[in-house]
Length: 503
Picture 1 (tube, rainbow, N blue to C red):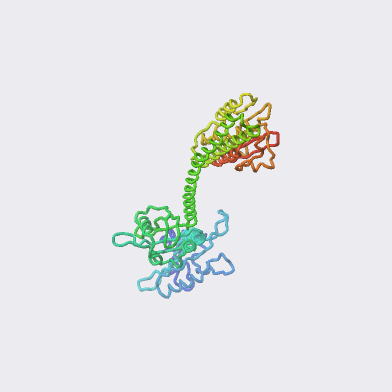
Picture 2 (cartoon, one colour):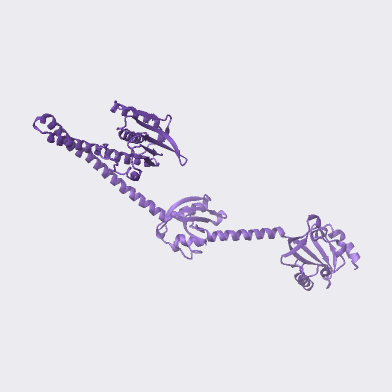
């Protein structure tokens, strides 16, 4: 058979075929008898340049050229076809195909899966060898992408600090979950559970007394496919867990993936806090009982001391000399001061225990009411009140009235020696947050002692200068703190003071 005749025989058959084919003559040179148009397009080859030439003459093996087509595997495959008269499938080969200049030239990496198949004649001899290749580049690229994805997943699986495992839930004949087997666990699993070598083992084997609720939850997820987020205790492991679990794979596989975190420390802290709250409640009840005792048992003797001292001063004044009358008056003043101190302490106790009720509060309106009340206590004083209008906030109206009562009361008291007193209430901005203030032009204080202002019984002035118990500013601080705010003061001796608070 001549080359020309062979070409004519196969021209119509292969040139228009959609696949990538070469037709080879079964001789040592493996002469190319025909090529499909698809093959020529894929390899950027012209038919006239390859047909009639030996395969390895057209595609030589050149180890010095990294883009040359390797032929050693191809030659071995073709020789096996000659020897066995059977098809031979080669491993996937990587080829660098030169791009046309119109597409920028250079090389494009492609992957082909070659198959060499003999065409046998009637007497069993090989007439031709069909060298067929399938372009599996997309498949190889997908495979590589999958490999990289799995590599990333494995890296994440192994490095994440959350415990991760997959399990197979085991059921009895009635579809009741009775156990589960660990399929995969990550390194954090051991850290979170303390269980070693869990893979392939059953939970009942590891912890025979493991609570039934674990099996019930995972069994329900495996059967229904509904994920679950929950917190549970594993008593036998002496741990608490925050768990998210969901079904993995097909329903019949009954597999569940679990992400979990050991929250034992948090639970212990919550339990400690609960116990602390219980103890605190008991202490508060004791304080309430003590406050009741103070309120009723101490007030009565003080009233008696004050009352009998007054009777002595009124009914026996002519029988007492001047020092005696003065001493009795001091007894009365001391008992009255003690009664006031008791009232202030009880008020402070109530402020600490009272439940906060938040609602809109008009601070300007409260300030005006307090100012009017103060004016009535000493009508002869000249005091200018400057109250900014429209100052509103959200908080407990009763406690905020106590707060302003104390701040205005302080300002009123410490401006008592000013012929023209001035008390101002307003709002400013501090660190981007609204800060309310009460300013006066009274006695002021030395900033070196500002840290004492909000301490119980701490006073910066003597009783002979200004009366008081040293409880008012402590009450102010408690109220502000209960509103999650801050309170501070600025002042100078004989130049007034200003108290700021945020809510």
